[in-house]
Image (cartoon, rainbow, N blue to C red):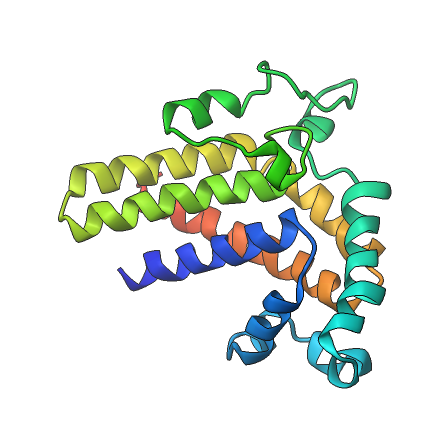
Length: 205
């Protein structure tokens, strides 16, 4: 149960930070969280992190960096990396939609401000939903449902995350202008590789 809770928290955090700009509320949470130093090791050494007020840090530095790595110079969509023509599939033919429909996951495009359901933040949010459902199954002692959800997580990870996300995150790491997004890229990639190994072992592959 503890492993599931840790995975749930990580997917919640990473999907939020990769999907939208950081706000002041998020910074307050990160500053208070005892795991922040481990997840963002270079952030603690950043002078601006230690000296600027949250509002200025967000508006003048973090959100500028987010725009750079998510909207202007890099493309955080699976189909850009997996299609030969490098076009983002924005319609119903996007390969992730079958999974979303089957498990009742709806992408709120206006709220998320994404153009396609295969955005990295959306895919990690879907994993969060699957892990959350698994948590509920475990609480209900429904081993069959829990095992099935683990299989779905492994399948989705293998088909729709692990085969492209490293390319994007490595680019984020080198394009990032702040230690925050540099560390976020490294932490996300390390977690996903570790989680892929966990899912493989859990499913007896």
